[in-house]
Image (cartoon, rainbow, N blue to C red; front, top):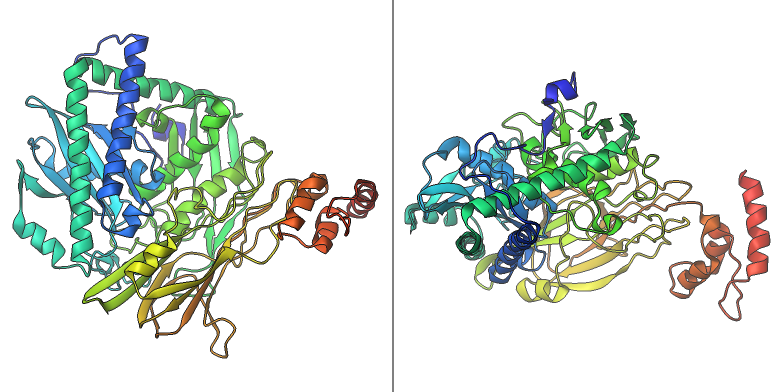
Length: 613
């Protein structure tokens, strides 16, 4: 069935995958089970090696340290054969990058060509995420692509790094729409100079772009070696078999859900980065029909007048696919890995009306889409919490708190640092929420403080778990961090995030809500002021401090059911006071030993349970 038949009335519903082959450029052959495992493992290893090369060669910290990248091999139509264990946002968008390039160059690829693309209305996740694609040939036959994406520290936008408050996507930086950077192995020096002459950080951009090209060349070499060992027909037939296997596994998990609609409570974003105090609605429901599933975002706020919108093809589709994949095909829960390829995408659909924040109309800005994209998986978890209680979490921070620090002349050059601050997970069945980690769509790393301090005139004066207690629950919520930077020279700061001030992460099944974040300038001084989570080019003087407090996740389950020994451990670790242990968990701590008084705890819990019944 096509999308219109599956999801009547949802005119923008799109599968996140391409589906089975209507055309092949190889002969379909039978692949024995041993060869299937060998070729499947080799494909995954190629993608992994590509990503590691990119990380090791990259110049900027956002690629080298935060690993804000992705790598994959794809067939000639853009079906993903394999991907690196990198950022789902990057890996999941690569098929859309292929489609963006294919619309201009299909049928005209040659060995040695290298294409560069970042057009957010033609497949790119957003304009700072450059995509590099190199066509794969076996003899004269074009069979696929080696591709990677990575976040550039600057692309010549109105503000260094990125901008939120922009009139349209042209102000978000240089657009490279499926340009051919190398033709038959020869680099276009004129195009290269044009790109580097229009960014603030040409050295970092050049190093990162060379690393991305090398990543794709490695993929080309490894794929050629695999074909030389096994033959094109066997390699591509094995890849097809793995796609079909992944599709069967995904459909089997979807079919375990009863058909119907699963709405999530409405969620709210703080603002669009310009009209502060005006929250933006996220409406979500999950639709299940047989072995197909659709995440419908109908009812979400209309597109904004700033860059706080999400490209549908390059950002929303990968986010929906990630949400469903992570929930239904988790490797730990499954006991065996399911390869990430086009087969996983095929039964998964997304829908967002044209002109909404999740499907803006050209040329609206759409660079600042980090937070909205992370809220999609969080909403899917909420929608399916009653159906899959042992697989979901309490509300997560669901927010990439991304800051850009720029210095116009540091050591003789324009220095820009992109910092990805970690958040926290909600509690989940059997486990407390994870503290201070990048959540959901990010899968990136926080920047090492030492690297930040070495590369820019800034000093970290505080970095620790936030002072407030975590959200209570049978399994508590994860804790956010608090970090304070002192600027040693004048700087400009831009950020895109969401402090969740009006809609903190929600506890589930009786757990408590998480805590919102906060951004302060010069805390604890007469000049203290609070900043919104989204700022564009805020000026800081030498000696100014910036304090970032990150969101804490929600709790899972009734706090009165938490193991008293775990509560006592939290008290000993300084996460709770004895009074909070008593009030929130009904646990009485022996002041002499620090151990829980089990008899007194049982009595107090009976009393508290009766009061709340």
